[in-house]
Amino acid sequence: MTTRCLVSISDYSKEEIIEVLQSASEFEKNPNQRLLEGKVVASLFFEPSTRTRLSFETAINRLGGRIIGFADASSSSVQKGETLKDTIKMVDNYCDLIVMRHPVEGAARYASEVAKHPVINAGDGANQHPSQTMLDLYSIYKTQGSLENLNICMVGDLKYGRTVHSLLQAMSHFHPVFHFVAPKELRMPDEYKIYLDELGIPYYEHTELSEQVMNIADILYMTRVQKERFADLLEYEKVKNVYILKNSMLNGTKDNLRILHPLPRVGEIDVDVDDNPKAYYFEQARNGVFARQAIICKSLGIK
Ligand code: CP
Image (tube, rainbow, N blue to C red; front, side, top):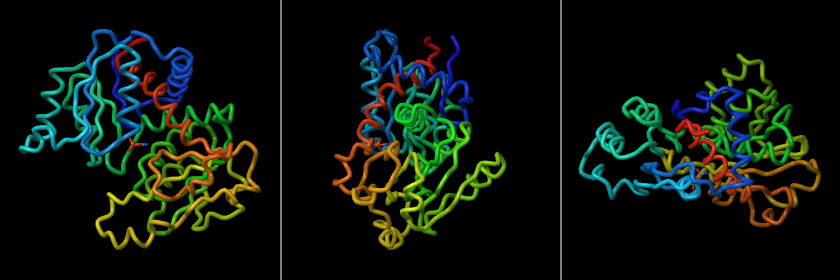
């Protein structure tokens, strides 16, 4: 049985991404299977979470596994000064798989080097959120019927938003055209633009969420401005409400357009969008259970 970490979305090849999406589709048809009987999964959340933690826990419960861990590191011996290395070495003694969210970029890679059991990155700082990407891809595939040749419009905090970084890398396998809509302070970091340049993938940068951009999009991927990553809250105040999507802005958009958001939202999508059939963010979060069931099984080498 081969086990596998998922620390960065680039840990999966294109073929593996497709394999996990197929597996997610099977889990959606039949989510209750006892594939994790006798397995213990550690869920270590050093940062707040609703969707990621609870959808991982739902995935594990539906597969018959057991969960240990914490939702708040202040209830662990981290509070007494225990290092991440020691915490991981201890937890690794007790479980078969570690799911970890941590505020420090690279913490998940470090944990994967310390642990004998596989590690799934549930978000590390502004770096990566690969399990979110798998549910995003699954949502895009379900709504568009394909991942190929799509116009993907990413809006908001493209600097600190880890979900857009992982999604950009994953979508790069499927001939996308990207539109990045962000204020200059929150532009897509150069490393990701260089990555696209090297692959010859087109991208366009905008500061306005204009009608022109909205009307060519197949996927409008809205993001929250990540207040917790700002060193200076005055800088956050300047950009926090820079884009607010309203229902009236969707009038000329394509029929197949779907609005995604990793959530939580804090105002960047007006509630008047929620009843529009193009709003897909709540279904997107539901897809997280099936995508995470597929990732867990792949990580543990369970067919
Ligand atoms: N999408 C996401 O990571 O949400 P949570 O922070 O609630 O887990």
